[in-house]
Image 1 (cartoon, rainbow, N blue to C red):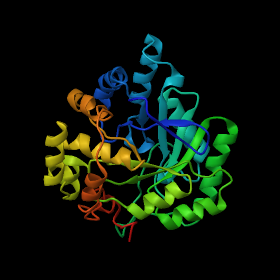
Image 2 (image 1 turned 120 degrees about the horizontal axis):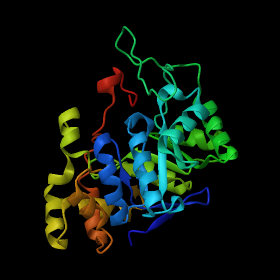
Image 3 (image 1 turned 120 degrees about the vertical axis):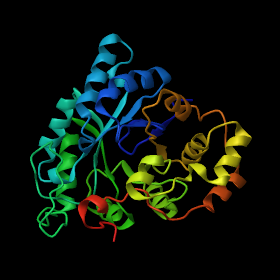
Image 4 (image 1 turned 90 degrees about the horizontal axis):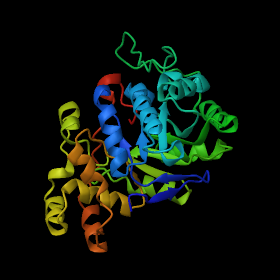
Length: 312
């Protein structure tokens, strides 16, 4: 069941569970990725801004060379950074070079905002003297999207999508798109369920990928002062019932809402646990109980770094 897939509007298939590499230390990726492949992971979620595409590329190239998997066996996602909205093709080619790939399975607009260009692939976040992010108001999201569509037409990207888009921006993208977004990757987990956004996307044929599906854990508590739902009494109770971990229960919940989940971990034991979620199913009543723990709490708030709350 680790091979469970989701159909994209582009006609391609995306594994329902993947491995996120945000905050994964570059030097350990060469160990993490081969181990993940051995365990059955076939979907890897990357981004130019994670600054580890080159290491992911080295690990994948070695796996292909050793015959561990073939290129067509894996699904690779990466993302266009804010400062490269005016340089979409160049940024995509830069990511492909670092990943040592001929094509991407999925390319996403990382955030719905264009910022001051700092050089292709540098993924800078220029901040002005006033302490606020330097937003480039001359570049529209529509023009960025049409540049993304050109990547599909050129054959270097199979599917394109959006990330961190709300209902309004998603609806707007649907209105001007020739190729509609296949995916919207958003933060969603039991303490930030975003039911309406999830249902809106699904109604319009957009697969939702849940980034930070476990609420960020200790890292987000340290960075953003956020408490993860991993210690919520309900998940401790369900974990005991199913002889699983709270994280496994939360990921199972994510799958049962028909979202794609991309937990991240650099620990072998966690990699094993996170993919071992296909042998049990939460009941309708348990799903209903989980819906009641929603605190509408965003765990990842980039305003800490950008001096402006883009979600305001």
